[in-house]
Amino acid sequence: MKKDRKTGRRSEEGIALLISIFVLLLISVVAIALLVSSGTETALGANYRTSSTVYYAAIAGLEEARGRLLPPLTKNPNYFGAAVIPTPFPLGQTVYVINRLPGENIVPWDSTNAFYDNEYQTEFGTAASSAAFQSVASVWDNNIQGIPGPIFKWVRINAATEQSLFLQVNASGSYDNSTPIYYDPSHHDSSLNPWPSLVVGSTPTAVQALEITSVASLPNGSQKTLQYLVAPMALNLTFPAAITLDGNGVQYTGPGSSQFYVSGIDQGTPGCPSTTGTHYPAIGYLNSSDLSNINATPAANYQGGPPSLELVTVPPNLQSVAALNNLVQTLTVNADHVIPGPATATSMPSGMTAANPMIVVVNGDLDLSSWHHTGYGILLVTGELMYDPDAFWNGIVLVIGKGKFTYENNGFGTIYGALLIAQTVDSSGLPLVGSPGAATVGMAQPPLTPGNGGVGVYYSSCWIQYAQATLPYKVLSFHEIRQ
Image 1 (cartoon, helix red, strand yellow):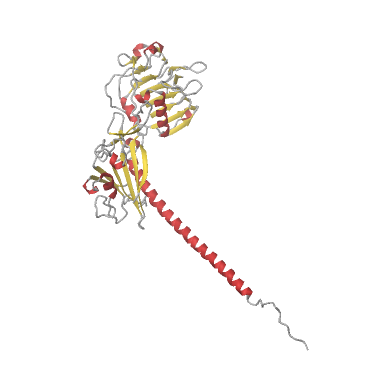
Image 2 (cartoon, one colour; image 1 turned 45 degrees about the vertical axis):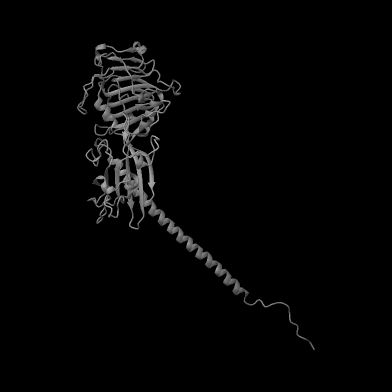
């Protein structure tokens, strides 16, 4: 008789179900994690989109206000004008640029308004409602074209002070709230090196700094407040003569043509009629020993002064190599056209008119042969300028670098404004130190064709000032204001 024996193995029935359940739970956890992650990514993307939208809307407000500070000669039909932004801009006055959507009521100076300017109280310690204010409409404010514009609500423009900037400009130990802040591009440090900086109060070479504050808001409540500190790009270029030979050991050889004149008698032209009536020398030089290097004949064709050839002093922003290099850098950064050299007449831009002067910078040599046109504005050449006397230029011609100006060919062109030549690099292209070197004006040598100089160079303070009025307002600082 056999006995049943029980085995020691347990039954494995149901294990597959348990594994399936575990795998299903694991997949569910992963799926839930993916859903949460996706939702988070979506929320982050939405937040980023909202933040970017309101940020760039506020930037658009800043840029509209900055752009409308430009004078009308740059063909800006929305220029604020002196009636809105006087020079200097008085403390305590504000200009608001209002940008309403249909049905909105935006009154930044009303404390009960949804878009009240709380920031003004923070900066000046005075409620915006008590400030003298003026409002103008944004170019986008309920525009009749119905084109959706940026969604900023308002932009405030006001004079800056130490207190409004929360910045001790002159390290006096307190924040002055009664004196406007200015920006002096010709400021020098204790070693007399160029050191453009803010200053408290006006100086002969300083321009007033303005605050531009922009507020943008979305229907969901997202809001940004951004602020610029801006100042007009003032070159403060003045010239002591029709032709200024800046530096030591300068050389000048005129064309000797009976039709060629250099006149320092300030005069206007049909496109720029105003004058000061001042007589400047025809040619100005900086060292008395250089007079013997100036061959200006016939003498009667060099008018001004008297004397027509005179020892002069240039302003600080034209005196040293460092200052001249700073000028070159400023013009290059703000140029309408920067042309690599060597360049020819075909490289010159089109579209220059009396209503549209330009800043043209040529980094290297420029040969204007066969350029039978008229230029308006500022021409800067860092190499040699081969000037075709058939070309006209109304404004300022600067040859800073090699410091060499050469007449070639013949013609009947004229430079109205001022011409300055300065050598800031040696023959190897290495920068000079201290004072500029030997500026040179002469005639082309064979095989090139010497020129007759055209009709000449005529001093015009009107064109000198007009050429400098094309520069924008420079952003000195930019920051976001916490809500």
